[in-house]
Length: 331
Image (cartoon, rainbow, N blue to C red; front, side, top):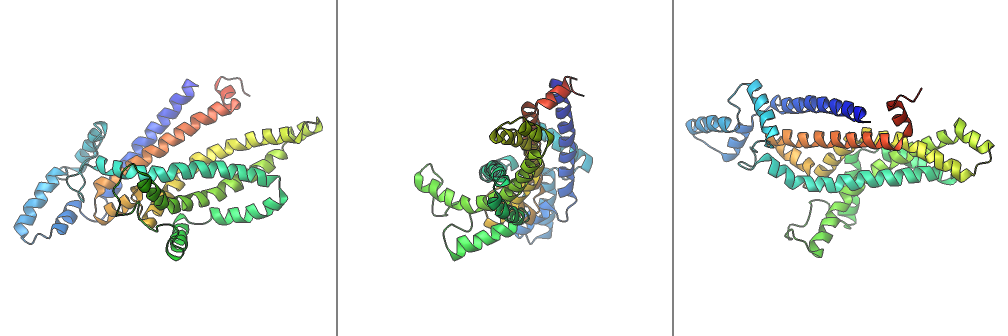
């Protein structure tokens, strides 16, 4: 078990180094200059003053050194817990800006991922043994899982936010309120959270329902199910074993789908102007602030890797066959 964890840690560490390197490279090869963009917003008309300020801020942001030196400086700052300073919100640290937006993104992602996975698997398992439900869940599930996150977000914002007016169509909370621990602010926060959450939940739900439905049918037709049925085992017991075995690919699928769901969450936040990491990425792109961009992408990469590592460990704990293979007892 420890050897398995050690191998996984090595693979994830190598993946982290490669991903962070790509994350550092992409913004620097984007068109535009963060210093020029920042000074253009200041509307400086004197060319000499503009040149002096450009030189000053390039030194502040460490852009006056060769690329390889910037790369090593980035890793040195990363080990110190420093992600640099934002050019669009100078002189605020990038880490502080990200930590203000991160709770909004987590409030969308965690409930959407967990609830869609749990409800979708239960619904798909029930549909596999109910013909009436199966005739409806399959086509509806295919439609939902093929729906782009952004398109559904736009549809919900237009229908339930603008036409019906049931929920706010944008923002994280009303501008007339001050963030505080009160029922008025919490209820307003939930009302702004509901539509972005539903756009993520509905799309993910269809995929999990279809996957579980197909896996249950496959397991019920497997040799062990037929053998148990021939021995006179109760149908409920056979379905219980089928559900347990069908859950294993769904757990693996959860690790695979994490990146897709996170990307969908970032796009959904942009549609609803929700103050999470997605909206922060859009602002950083518009202002050529690649310090914030690489900081946000770093958080996304670390989050996906940690979640996948946890899922790998859970898979080993719930599947005895993997533990047998680790100890050399398997065929």
